[in-house]
Each structure stands twice: as C-alpha cells, then as structure tokens.
Amino acid sequence: MLRVTISTKKSTHAKKFGKLIFDDGTVLDGEGFGYSTTVFGEIVFNTGMVGYTEALTDPSYKGQILTLTYPLVGNYGVPDPEVKDDDGIPKYFEANEIQARGLVIHELSHTASHWNLSMTLDEWMYNEKIPGIAEIDTRALTKKLRTSGVMMAALVVSDTEIDVEAVKKQLSEATNYNSEQFMDAVSTKEEKVYGNEEQTVVVIDTGAKFAIIRNVRELGYKVVVVPWNTSYEKIMSYNPKGIVLSSGPGDPQNCPATIETTKKLIENNIPTLGICLGAQIIGIAGNTETYKLKYGHRGQNKPCVNLETNQVYVTSQNHGYGIKPESLEKSDFNLWFTNADDKTVEGIKHKTKRCIAVQFHPEAAPGPFDCKYVFEELKELMEK
Ligand SMILES: NC(=O)CC[C@H](N)C(=O)O
Image (cartoon, rainbow, N blue to C red; front, side):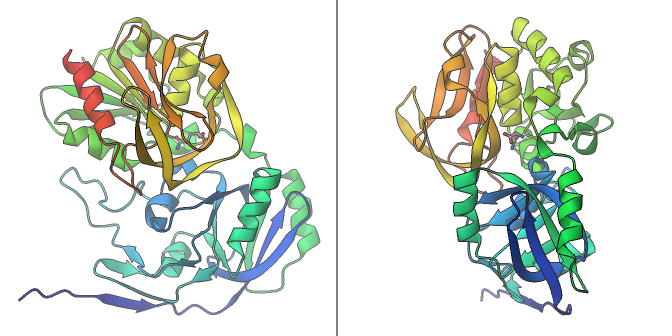
C-alpha cells in the first residue's frame, strides 16, 4: 500500500508591524512577518503561482524586494536545505541562502502542509533575517509598478510602531539599485568542481542558480564554476568543451571583466551558452546594446517564439534588463527567440560562431521545463 506522509507546521511568531514605503512617497500598511528589520531595494513583482523557495534564493533577486501577485503564499512551507543531490548541491534551492532583500505578499498561510516541508515560510525568513510583509494588495501594487515602472522602496518590519518620516529620509539616501555592484556578493570566490568526467564545461558565475549547474551536469560533463572576472586564458587552462555564462543580478554593464572574456570566447569560436544576464553580456560582447525595461519580466508563463521553428514555448523569466531589438541589426547576432507579449529579444544566435544565448531560464526552477532543449543545443555546439 502506498503511504504518503504529509507534514504540517504552524507559524508561532507574534504579530509585527509592517510598512512598505515607496520612493514616490506612497506608504502601504501591512502585517510584518519573518525578521524585524528595515531593508531598501528595488521593488519588483513576479506573477508565478508557486516557486517562492526557488525565487527567494535566486541570486538575480539580490538588491530587490520581491512582490508575489499570487494571493496565498506559504501553504506548502519550505523544504530542508540539508537535502542535497549527488553533487552535494541543495536539491530544492537556487543558492545557499535567501537572496531577495524582502518579500511582499497578500496572505501568508500560517499553516503549511507538504510531503517534504521542514519549516514554514515565516520561520525560514526569520532564521535568514529577511523581512516579509503580508496583507498588501499585491495586484494593485503590481498595477502601480506597471504604470510608473519599478522603483526603490523600503520594507520595514518591526515589533514596535514605525517612524515613517525617518524611514523616508533613509530611503532617499539609500544606494540606488541601478548603481549597486553585486558581483562580489554573488560570485564564487574560488573555482568549484562538480563531477569527474573527462570533458569539462566551465560555468562563469555571475550569480548562477544551482539549477544551471544541475542541468549542465545532466548533459554528462564535469562542471568547473569560476568567478565572474576569470580571464580567458585561465578559463582555457581547464581545456573546456564549452562555456556557460550564468544568470545574475544587476545591470550587465557592471560586469566589464566578463564582457572582455566573452569577446575572446566568441573570437576563438569556443562553444558558449548565455543565460539571462549571461545573454545580455554576450549581446554586449557581440555589439548589441542593452537597456532597462520599465517593469521587467518575472514569472513562469512568459510566451516566447522560437523563430527557427515558429514554435511557442512557455518560459520562466526573471529579468529587468534586455537587449535592444533595434541594436541586433548591426550586431553579430540573429534573433532566435522573441517574446510573444511585447516582442522583446528572448534569444540570439551568433551569425558565424558557436555562441547562443537566451533571455529566459531554460533551467526553470521554478517553472516549466519546456526549454530544457536549449542545453542540448549547447551540447550539439560542443560536439560539432
Ligand atoms: N536572471 C537574470 O540573470 C537577470 C539578469 C539581469 N540582472 C536583469 O535583471 O535583467
């Protein structure tokens, strides 16, 4: 007989004050949860219905306060970070700790039930010292961001009354997201090796999600993860079959060392796949231009058309910058994928070299696996 064990947990923390204070002066009242503290960051929204554990640990959310539009959050709890895969990578998370600065939701589920939960969302965020605010109309908030564009905000969770004027002053002095430097915070400090296969793929870590490493491992290669500013010569010393430029936070222009390395990878026809930030870096290295989107693409149901097959795929996305469509014309790339909603650039292929890139997340985590074949395309390039 099949026996399924469902774990159930209840949050036990006392009620806290919570306020969300925007750059434009708007103040929203809510109920604080997680850790009592004040954070400043760019406030963005994600329209996915599930996947808060993956989203919160995605290093691309560094420096951002994440709003979830789905109205009920936390009901399946949080799995055990100690559960690892065969390479010793946490199985259910995208980094070793929460990366977003704070979380904004409508209703927090105080009771969580799931077969693999080890704690509630409230407990996890408390342990990781991350503030959360509930009882916010996150759909109205999303409409606001879609109209005005993303902006800086403060999220305050406190056990005592909150002094709004004092926080407004701090917010006006906080470092703007656009000029924050994230690479030292998200990139590995030293090389990391996974597996002992004969052939190697080097992942340049500009804030890589664990799922990117997992997917390259599934292709059957040893993976060497290197810091974001590793030189071309150092990378070639691993004798790689191919390179993956990872996802990551912030403006791609803040990764000049990676852009320089990428120019050489392209010049020397080294098989390369870029994902999200990695795609933008490849774009800049190959003479396209990037720009900041008004409110970005963050969700798991973003339709993209593969122009080679005219097939539409539902993709997982989390980005605030993009490659300017009009800059492709005079660049070294052809358009590969386009966004069916707003015609933004979702994938590019080099005209003559073994270099491909996607703006969406073929590794999903969270989201649909429909575009996993992009990793197979890298494999084909490596075996050409
Ligand atoms: N997920 C990512 O790699 C994001 C890329 C980049 N930081 C952006 O926001 O566009």
